[in-house]
Length: 375
Image 1 (cartoon, rainbow, N blue to C red):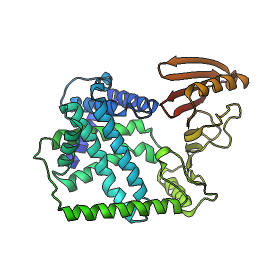
Image 2 (cartoon, rainbow, N blue to C red; image 1 turned 90 degrees about the vertical axis):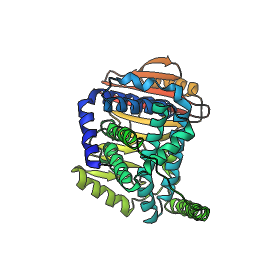
Image 3 (spheres, rainbow, N blue to C red; image 1 turned 120 degrees about the horizontal axis):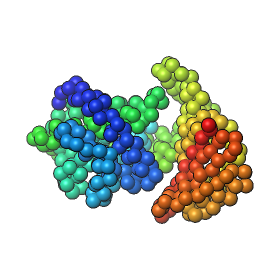
Image 4 (cartoon, helix red, strand yellow; image 1 turned 45 degrees about the vertical axis):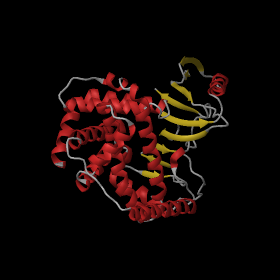
């Protein structure tokens, strides 16, 4: 695999078709979040097919992302399996040095194999087992070079999330284009194989099990559990050395003042806070639902131009009624709309502030996002 040539093609295709890729990626991210990841599989499949059509010189547009819901189940299962494996990797990643090396070795491969498996489903109409099997064998055609390529793709696609300089929606298409290109190239090769003796497999599984146990121990020893559900298991009252060091490192990388929260669950970059806790100056006239847990926060330290995501076990109807009542009691002008399974509550005040509460639910959980804006 010619990595340099592939990277050149990725950037050429991205800049030449920026608008369609940006809109398609933005819609995929928004709808995946609003559906709690349920629609991520078919939407991502459509995004990959857009990239494939552009690589082949065919005409396409953002509507392509809605054209593969006939492959809903296999693409959903692939995204679930990928998320589960990522969760297990994050547990092992808590082990100093060994866990970090393991995560570095496995995560890039998982990224590329998952995307190529979805590509095999939507492009060749393969079933779940065939798609995963063919994706793994495609990766094995040249493991070292393909791994390096997948590592570069992972870095490129997540630059926005790591550096907080540009939105991740601007860098995510690079990874998808790269995966589509890898699928196009590797699927034409003779499938690779990896033959392991039964004894080797048993030893590997034993080592993997031991790493998982150690990872769990290290997670709880450090006072944290994996952020699979977006929450920390324990609170650490003091900022530790690694958090201070991370803040200084990111400050030197970005040229901006970066602070890591005392519990490790938040980061502030030039006054913009990212994390799993609300800032202490969050507006008092926005009442928080008493039985909800914060999942993520992004915005200014005083709540202006921010987005906060919460979850609760209560029904969405109770959450909607609560915010309709409490917002009106706090002097907000409120308007409510229902779009299928999504409830939208819009509110504003004469001081130039406005916002919305978007509420979605599954059988056992309700998720709602409070967005605030100040003119």
